[in-house]
Image (cartoon, rainbow, N blue to C red; front, top):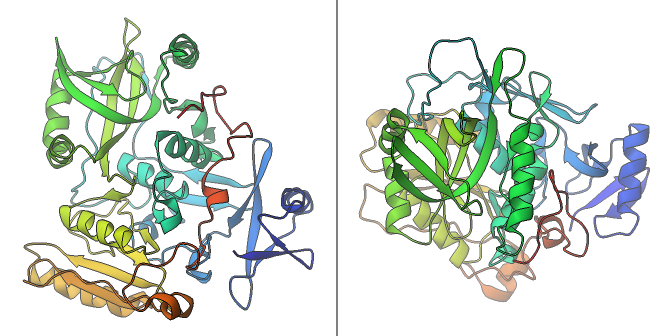
Length: 446
């Protein structure tokens, strides 16, 4: 576990006075040092409601050791490098992050144009690096929530309660046009028949804040797991898990475009019951008070809640998880589906992490050329698998001496001896304490 230097003294996250150190550092403007590397890497303390969180300095995540929780994928290996400091601007003094969104959060009520939806396209001719598409914002939250990281200790410990908790935490301190995004974000809590009336009451209170005001119809953000996409009398509707009594409706043209734009994701979801289909959408309330989709994007995640874009990526994730590896899934953000990026960064290879690239079926000559350039510029070792060749997927060997001494190369890492760059104590909220909940204390009967 990584230690941190506060006021000249080394402190660990499991130490009793860790929160006191965070509080003092925040009050005095002190920058703790992460001791994962030499020289140590500066960090800062952010306040989220009544809690204090240790965060990496903006644009310095790749300076941390790959085993460290604060390690960030190097710029250029994922889509984040394109939007960092443009659409994502972090202020470590205030602890706030300003986001420039490429989709609206309100609509003028005087407009004669009907409020319609347009699914976020994954394939674009040119993405605006100064704004986050809805898919990019969803991927940003997922990454900030730590849900793109994996270690063997996480096996069997992810569920909607955990995913929701960390997404809520990640949404804190994010601003769009100086407005807190957490205040307009709804993530359904775990449903319980015994508490269905209380849950519905909390949802109604949230919806009550969405009434038109000052000539504008406000939109809210909803993040949820899709249970079913069905037809309705005048279009379609989404049945969201943990929100079975409140379907989200879609106009006929929206329903048609969703099925077209996300045909691959929907097909994967319908064909494999282990796949989760997650949605982020903006919605408004119709005259009847029912939620109506404005803009929507869908992503597929596997049984471990790890996101993937293709069957080849899913195969890679399954291999890595089965072999007990440590890794970070890269996210595309505003990059088009034809742009080259690393699929994952494998962090248990020494002395450096390794970027794993998948060459997709039907890749063009320009794709190979772009990949060669990226590998040369990346600054870390590369491992490439070409789906166009008749060769089995292989993984780079584990070069951690502590693991190799006991297991040998290509043997699953022992969860108790491998790198501890995402400790369970940080990842899973203590159910003996009251976890942060934006709306109310939620049921913890999982």
